[in-house]
Image (cartoon, rainbow, N blue to C red):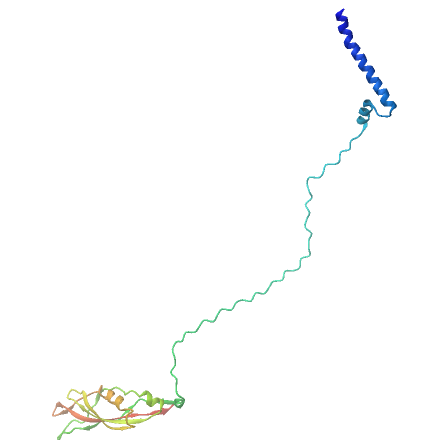
Length: 213
């Protein structure tokens, strides 16, 4: 008895549920609302158009070729090298205007005149072994001064000059010192009497002058 009841109860529930569903469909169809079955059917017929996938790869835009103008080369001025300073090699002496075309000559030494102071036969051919030319004074050169000096001196038995005296000078105070300094350096062959060297006195004229060059 109870087994029959157990089997019929689910069957009754299933039938009741089916009746409920059928009634719901009828009511919905009368109201114009599509039923669940119709919705499923229409959904199945609908074509879903999926939009085409966006292109992931972007087209690489090529740069537009611009009409390039020929490049103008700028002219760069080459820097000039600074001129090197010229180091003075030497300073040329300034020649006074009055000396242009003039050349001073070496002082001229005249013939040696002897004043022996001895009597008897003596050897008079005394000769200078060493000679030194006097220096022309710079002041006399700048002022174009010419002149002469007459000297008297002693020649020892060894030929050395000593005891120099200025007998005459023209002009005075210009050429004397240079003439005396030069004659003191001279060396002579000594005077001989009877083959023996002796002291002797002599005179010498020294001239200072210019020549036209």
